[in-house]
Length: 175
Image (cartoon, rainbow, N blue to C red; front, top):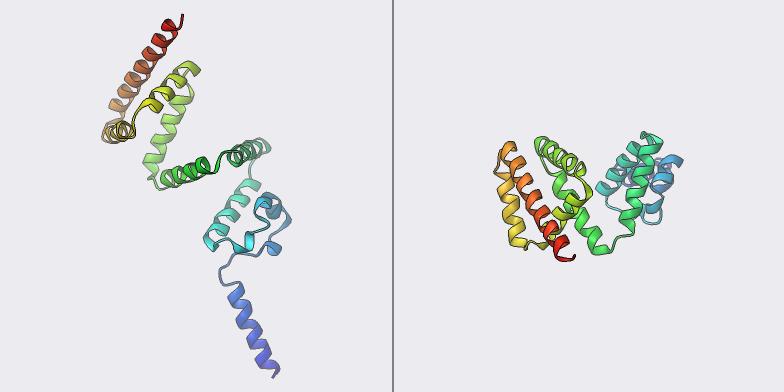
């Protein structure tokens, strides 16, 4: 009889821990602190999501204090966005995450280039992009995908300067 009870216990304990992801109570205090936003529903999250979050929590613990602060600020900004914008960002992140290593490198280069622009030029480019129709945006994306790096750089310059021209025109007409 005792053997049957032990076997039943082992069977059910294997089922409980078969996914390899600890329950909330099994997380260490550092993991619980980092993942505190998920404390109320951790055990109900899909296994893949918990694994992903656990990996991120462990990565977070290895960051410098400055990197952690930057990450927390981004998370706070995300939490304060409307739900539809949060959803769009998650979809965008998922899309970018599916890029090859070369594509990710190219995206990082583009972001670095954009960050180094003066604020007025950045805003002009944003305004120009927002003014485009979805079809024009898609056409632009496809055009960029099929270009060499040199052609992309030239096209970005054209786009930037045409946006700057729009900015200059709007400033002179408002005077």
